[in-house]
Image (cartoon, rainbow, N blue to C red; front, side):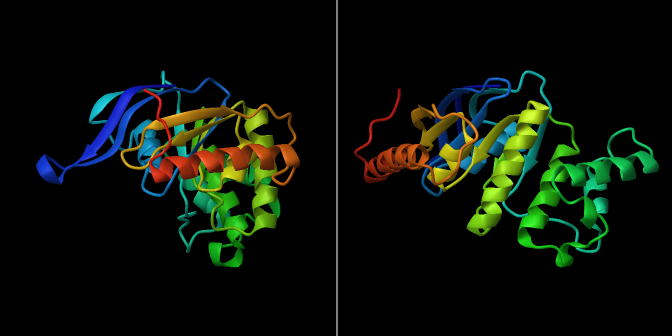
Length: 247
């Protein structure tokens, strides 16, 4: 997946707002990349461009024919449907019979640890469980690339840690490529092969950090904390206007 000199502007003339500028980024097959940066730096906009939900104003986005699925900040489940039925919605556009959709949705819920909750409605599930349903729904699209926009930001630390482990397992089993947006720098280092730091609006790539940390990782291990502290310091420099940006 490749972005070349990609930019995005909203509006025109003096009122135009530049969200992204000059983004050039290559994400290898099977790579887990996290995007970090201040609020409003264009992280979510970048995911929308990759997903094809929006088009760049300049430059290009090439997914090389890979199938892309997106998981948003909120689960956005239909409250009147069961967990299984919510997952089945993602299967209706594909050539599955009703029985096949039912079986596959339950299989996917088992994959995310909700095999016993297929018949529960969203109000009967915890926040972490609802996010697992949303993850199962994204996986139902059988995508090669999974785009995740702060999916665990509203969860407590224990639930988040458990979902980190589940996500890491699923990504490895399926060989998924992941682009993950987060405000939590330590979460980024915990999950990513590479952390990409964006400047304030318009978002530009300031620096990239490889996470030379063997898996499995934990969010509170010393090496994760140390690299996260370094990236956070750079984030503050960028926010204050003292950080250098890559050309």
